[in-house]
Length: 114
Length: 108
Image (cartoon, rainbow over all chains, first blue to last red; front, side):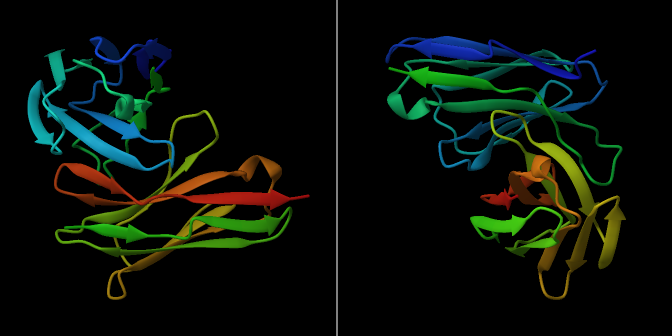
């Protein structure tokens, strides 16, 4: 069974379009995240949700809107896509019960904006 | 704010030992983690140090010195499959801050 899954794996779209990426985890974790990894491999946190509540928004443009219908899902909707949004987006989850806050990552979604 | 510094690239020979260093500046530090990421793959957790000292997991060891704001990942008996990027990360509040990663090249 896949622990953290994302769809789609690849997303190619035109500038100005709106797109969504879905994420689901079956680990029973209470915290979920979205990360952006750019072409230089820099892995940067975008959002963090705990039990469906937003707890971290790292100054991400408001074109990005996360939505958490329940604690097992955290979807990312992006409006008016720009060239600079091209990156790999990783969803992750963790449990607050662990000291190390180990992040369990999904396989990533490679977004290409043309 | 917080920042982590690690070398961008390291090259080593198969069978050898390599050390990847990480220095950090952060407030509210909880611990230092290491993640491995193969090309095209997702980051995967390797180790965590909350206290000073060495933690060993098979061929991999991780060290932390809180007084020096410094840590390292030690990989022994290098194998070609260890070719990957390695990220140090600090835990703070409800999030993890990642370094920019060290690309490890392994020569046969």
